[in-house]
Amino acid sequence: SSYEEICEFKCIDDRPISVNAHPLVNLFAVGFESGIIKVFDVESVTEATEFSQHETPVCLITHSASGEWFASVSSDSLICLYSCLRTY
Image (cartoon, rainbow, N blue to C red; front, side, top):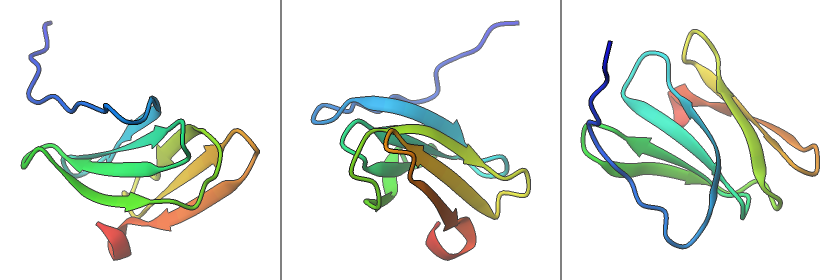
């Protein structure tokens, strides 16, 4: 099977380190070298929200199977949990 690109996001000011798609809606979260996490909306090709709890690179992001929350881990071993129901 083949896949077709449906949108493209450019990250000029910060280097993306990790990415994870929401399991139920057309959103994906990107963790950056700066520690920032940005959530992008695929349909509108916009940034939906931003989180700044981390101060070091975000090396892992994962959504729960239910889509209710996601977790992030930074290189200094800080783990953060976020509610998708409250923030998306």
